[in-house]
Length: 275
Picture 1 (cartoon, rainbow, N blue to C red):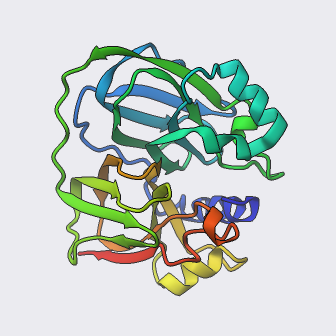
Picture 2 (picture 1 turned 60 degrees about the horizontal axis):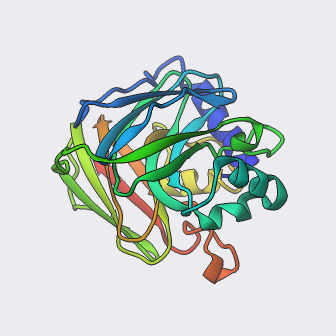
Picture 3 (picture 1 turned 135 degrees about the vertical axis):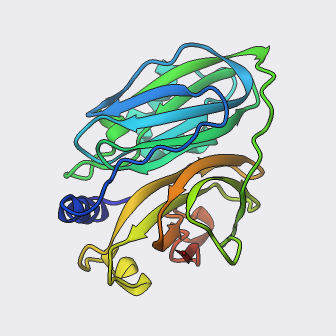
């Protein structure tokens, strides 16, 4: 997400404060690990066992934040990764295994996602959302790490109410989505990493209006969480609470195979309506 998109979303949130309740909390699928994020830090996580793990991320700050989980490559230390980030910027993330996480949450809101910590090792927590100057939050201190042990948690894989597949380059969902609390199983079936950001459109705005927002148009929708980047073959289970209205699912990850074009430009934009 670039700085202009971030600024437009914040403007949308401000405009909607008088009429919209932003905080949304769903039911957790396993006992959740509670994580808070603010300017610019995540709360510390204790070591965790391998297996299916639910994370509940709360944005306790005043800016937009998300919660990205990734595993360092074998033998890499956190200090080594941080040094690589300073030297190469986001290019250093090419060595990460993206596990998933909670999509963008507005200030005061909470999102819950279950991911598979399938291998022991060192995992990092990052926020890629930029500040007003375009600096990603991880470069300002919103980068943390936790250990995953070789002890299995024994937690069962969640059961999805809604099955979603992400591919190169499209988002596939059922024809009808109902309102209420629900679990979305979001599976990456493509070779590139993918995310699924959820936007709720403002009343009277169209999908075209919301997409125009990303290129300098007027505010048209608000982020409602979703699933952060997950590598090929991975599934995240997002705990969502949807109210009636029009929504848009988007993947903004750039594609190295297409000269850095965002996946949204390549077709990963999916509108839907909740009755």
